[in-house]
Length: 413
Image 1 (cartoon, rainbow, N blue to C red):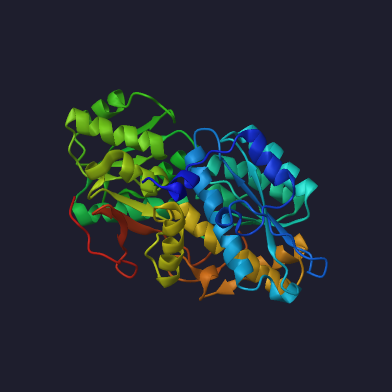
Image 2: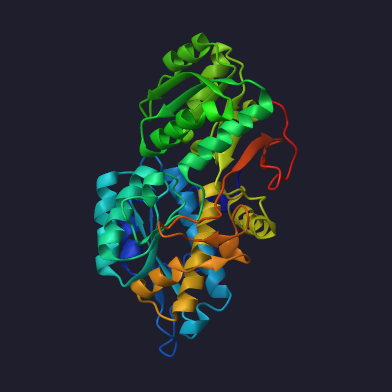
């Protein structure tokens, strides 16, 4: 889409420019909506509360990372416009961002820099599970709570105390994908292709482990190198496998290439694109009508409840597209942090961590997730979390599974 708002949403930060902005300490609420003006609190105002955000604004995941940054800023604006943290005298949230460049080494450096250089009450990030695992290690050492929508089950293992995952885990995604295949065929024969990353391997292992119990026959189980440029050898294997359905566990660019290659090679079988790239608006923009009827899963979707619809409408107005899964969940996470700050009545990260550990919400933006409830167990996992099945219908990504969460009827692929 054309227009100044669309142009703004696609703007890329240079590494130096992005970190200079973050290095000034605060990106104030509303920056994107006031032409970059930074609102400074008066001397009488309560001290601001710093929260960090680690996202890949440059590198291979840059486009998705920029969407996360847009959502993070919108979330802070919403909290501050609602009166800030009332238990702290109306203190405003200050968002300190760093570009992790889609690079694991940079994630470690930048997570450590934000935690040691700023008095953070909490931090969120990093989209890709492989990046988030590293950020989580740093946050655990720094004793700063980290909230994330990343899906690998490893984030809830190893005795982590400061890592909180409000949304569905990779193993849950796998079960939902398998169950959805039964909506298409009574005896599904599927090919599984997955990228060799934390996200890809965790989800695919879940598929493999649970397939027999869900009545699904996996006839092909094939990893590939993330970021590949030729999908034809992979699709030839899919074609030869005799599969009646494809499960692709891939991020955006890889999934676009897989779908296009299948079209070119005449491999016309239903696809479940899982999460990752499938739930991005850019996916539909790239493959067009070939996306119609394709299935996927997500830990969040913009139609799950009224609050999600309102958030998506605000995002759509600003950026010309619905708010995608990870970005929408990020809004909810910011309100979870705000809720914890209210109950802790302190910006101290240890007290915020304890307040998050006792979080129990079932209304408002903090509960804006499938099922509408958030309560963490001792591993930092939301005990109510579950994924939703989604489908591209008429250019929109709609929730079709499970029945309790469905907002539209399944369109047979």
